[in-house]
Amino acid sequence: MEIKNKKIIKIDSKLKKLAEKICKYEKVRMPFATIVRLKKKHAEINIELNRLITRRLVEENETFYELANKSYELLKNGSLKFKTTAQQMSATGTHTTELRGRLHRNGHIYCDVKKTNFPIFNFLSDYSFPSSFDGDIDCLGNVILKKKSTDYALFKRVPTRLEGEINAKGKIQVRATERDQDWLFGGKHIISQIVSEYTFKDSIYENEFFENKKKLEDLIHNFKEEITGH
Picture 1: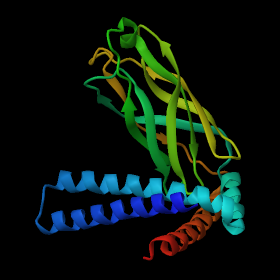
Picture 2 (picture 1 turned 120 degrees about the vertical axis):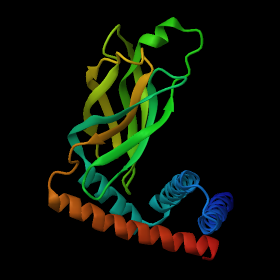
Picture 3 (picture 1 turned 90 degrees about the horizontal axis):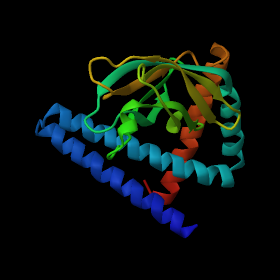
Picture 4 (picture 1 turned 45 degrees about the vertical axis):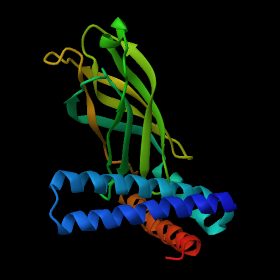
């Protein structure tokens, strides 16, 4: 328990220093791209901290546990569909291996590329593509998708549509159902962003999920305040 508390304090301290740095950079008018990069890093670390606290509260707080399970039930979707909305040139890899994102208030999941493969002297890599992804969505709507399987093709190596499901525990499985040809970049064009169709059964489920999310975030905030003192 004490080790976990120290880890929470350590990550929170990192967040505080980064927030101060961003504030300083904004005052001296550092390049906008630099500030955006730091804010993105801050958001990623904050998600990491929330995930850690969530794991603690699921075990220790009955109210949190019940709210989290309710959120997973609301997210359950047997027909989850994604569309590739952006592609990009990759300097090293030939396909995307990890996507990260979150469920937005409009009911759609947005995920951006986080990692690509690193082919080294492998001729077949030029013909590879991610045929399926596994991952999870947490009770706050944060998503991680990692490549599960790789397939090969002479043509049409950029997945443009994926279909799968979210189960009652927040686990996601999707597979590529349609692919496009990367004529211009010779296998170096990869998925940059995917966006889901409407995730919920209806607006009632959507509203209940985001009401739940606010309650969960309040519990996380209160717990962090107890541990860090602010």
